[in-house]
Length: 441
Ligand code: B12
Ligand code: SF4
Image 1 (cartoon, rainbow, N blue to C red):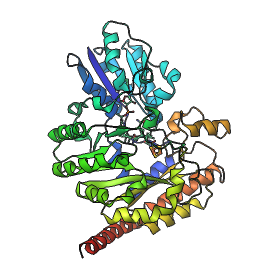
Image 2 (cartoon, rainbow, N blue to C red; image 1 turned 135 degrees about the vertical axis):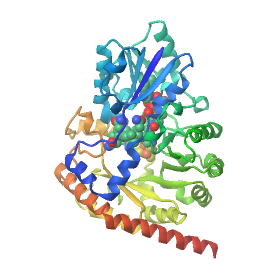
Image 3 (cartoon, protein in one colour; image 1 turned 120 degrees about the horizontal axis):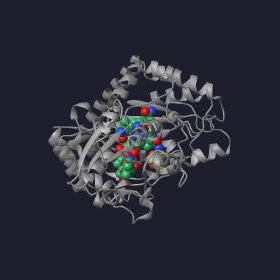
Image 4 (cartoon, rainbow, N blue to C red; image 1 turned 180 degrees about the horizontal axis):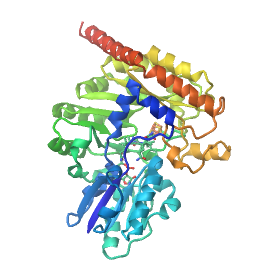
C-alpha cells in the first residue's frame, strides 16, 4: 500500500494587528522564524513503525496546492493537526474523501472531539497512535477499516516500545530544528493544559538508548543538529537526565526544551545542562504574581507554591549560562489591566533572557474550556481557528476582552523592541560571565 502523511505545520494567529506587528518587532520575528518550521513528530513516528512492504510519503500541508495531483495513487491519507488548523485538516481530508482516497485523522484535537472529526474521515484515532497503528493498517489491507480506533481501549503504550521516527523522509533543508520526544504526559495538571496529558494518563519516559538512537539518526542526516525535545515537562526524572546529558555533550548537539521551574534546586543538573548544549529552556511561569496562579494547577497547586521563588530561581538557572524563556499567560482569572506592567517589571527584575506572552486559551477537552462554557464566557464557541494562544476567545474576569487585547499589543511592543531585546541579551551574558568568574575564584 502507499500511504501519504500530511502534516499541518506553521504558526498561526487570526489577529491581523498582531500579525502586522510581528513583522516588525525583532524579538517576534526571530521567534516565529525559529518555531515555524518543525515537522510532525506524530506522523514521522507512525511512518517509522509502518511495515517496510508499504510505501510512505510525507508532506507539509502548505506544499500541497490541492489534493488532486497526488490523490489517485494513495491507499490511505493520514492527517494530523492540532486544534488551530483542524479546519485546514478537515478541508484536505474532504478533498481526498471526494476523490475516493481513504482518510485517517488523529492527534490532540481529534482525541477530544472524535464525533466532529468522524465527519471528515473514514477512520479516526483517539489517543496515542502507536497503540493502534499496525492494527489499523492490517484492517485496511483486508478492506475492514473500522470507523474508530482508541489507545484508551488498549493496554497502556510504553515508550520502551517507541518506534524510531522516520526522519529520513524529511527534506532537511526545510527545517531549522527537529523534534525528539523523551517523555510524554506531565505529573502536574494545569487547568488550561491541552498538551500530551490529553493522550496519556501517566508520565512516561523513553529509555536513554532509544533517545540517543534517535539523535544519532538525526545526526546522520544533519550533522550537529538543533534538537527540540517535544516534551511537556522534561526534567521530572533527574536521574535519567544526569545520564543523558553527558551523552548529548559528546554528540555536540544543541537543544531546547520545556520544563517546570523546580530544576533551580539542582546545581549538578544545571551544570550538566549548560555543558551539554542547552540553547534555551522554556518555563511556564504563567503569572508575574500569585494572582491568577492559585488553583491553576489542579492537583497540588504547585505553581502557586513556586511563585514566591520565581525571581531567585530564574537568576540561579541563568547564572549557569542557561537561557530562560519565561512564559506568561495573560487574562487569567483575577488579572486586571495592571498585569501588563507587572509582566514588564518582572521580566526586568528577573533579567529573563527571553519572554513569551500568550493569552489564556480554552482548548476543547480541557477543564478550563468546560468551566468557561459553564460560566458562559466563551466568545467564539466552535471557532477552533482562534485557538492559537494569540487570539482572545473568552471573556476575562477583571477587564474586557478589548482591554486584554490592547494591553497585549502594548506589552508586545515593549517586550520585543530592539532596545529591550538587546538589553536582555547583554544582561544575560554579563551576569553569566560574572557568576562564572565567581565560581572559579
Ligand atoms: C512541536 C510543536 C509544534 C510544531 C508542530 C509541528 C507539527 N506539524 O506537528 C509547530 C512549531 C509547527 C507548532 C505549531 C503550533 N502549535 Co505547537 N507544539 C509543539 C509541541 C512542542 C510538541 C508536539 C509534538 O511533537 N508532540 C509529540 C508527538 C509524537 O505527539 P502528537 O503530535 O500528539 O502525535 C501523537 C498522537 O497525537 C497520535 N497522532 C497524531 N496525529 C495522528 C494521526 C493519525 C491518523 C494517527 C493514527 C495518530 C495520530 O499519534 C502520535 C504518537 O502517539 C507541543 C507542546 C508539547 N510539549 O507537547 C505544542 C502544541 C502541540 N502546540 C500547540 C499550539 C497551540 C500550536 C499553534 C496553534 C501555535 C500558533 N499560534 O501557531 C500552532 C498550530 C499548528 C497547527 N498545525 O495547528 C498546543 C496545541 C494545543 C491543542 N490541543 O491544539 C501545544 C500542546 C502547546 C500548548 N501550549 O498547549 N507546534
Ligand atoms: S506544567 Fe505544563 S505540561 Fe504540565 S500540566 Fe501544566 S501546562 Fe501542562
